Image (tube, rainbow, N blue to C red):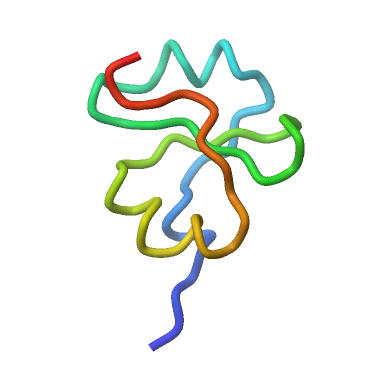
Length: 63
């Protein structure tokens, strides 16, 4: 079974501040393209796909 990152990542954000405002305390914000696009995911989702594809955490849970 292959992982479809598009389904895991959901709606992209162009602005980090907007993503930070929309995320819940238990979610993280990640990016894979030097800050041009951001995604809000749970830490579990991040560990199960995006992390292996080179995405980086830019806002941790609780922030």
